[in-house]
Image (cartoon, rainbow, N blue to C red; front, side, top):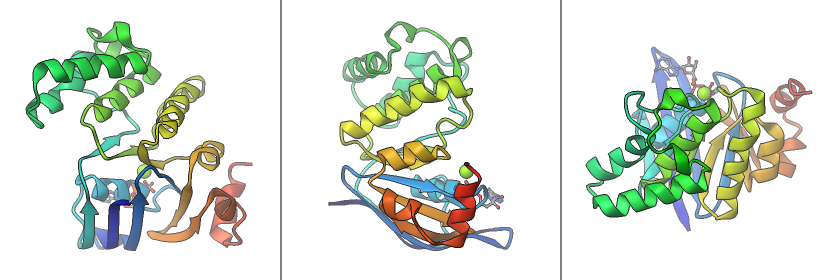
Length: 226
Ligand code: ADP
Ligand code: MG
């Protein structure tokens, strides 16, 4: 079943077309990774998908709530860990307090942060902050979770713990769209990969297909990781 669809999305900023007729869909339970050079439009796809940007034209079809995990965590600095997680479920989704707190505690436990609910973001490592932001996104019960370079702001030794969390979510068949520069991770975790180049989907397929593609820009891009 399709959970999400983008049809012929175009988006320009100041006369520069950064998304040129993008169409993609996401199946329930699927892990889709989006790779490509800086400036190719990856974040703009996620921002359009999650409603942070409005496309100039085209259509977006969603079946439910979508969540977004940012590169820079984007936690509220003046809220405790718990308040960061429960705020939107209580205020935006208007759910019952008891139920939301039970879910939030269970998510914190799953993220290995059971003892951090009263802590503030500045008291946590980058990896811990990113795990809080994943718990926050999950507490909205999204149909799809979008990640925008979730490890790019982390020190290399903290990257692994976040990739492990995302891999665990994939094993639970959480539907995810992941923008990442971690090529081995993308190859390992994805059902499908999209390579973006200058606002278009230049290559799309299984990890095997994409990583063995003859596309010149794709080869050049992969060459930068060797
Ligand atoms: P990526 O995530 O692949 O690095 P982005 O989607 O962030 O690429 O950006 C694609 C292009 O759109 C870049 O040239 C970027 O400078 C431009 N861009 C993105 N957001 C804005 C914005 N809000 N205003 C102006 N230009 C933007
Ligand atoms: Mg980006």
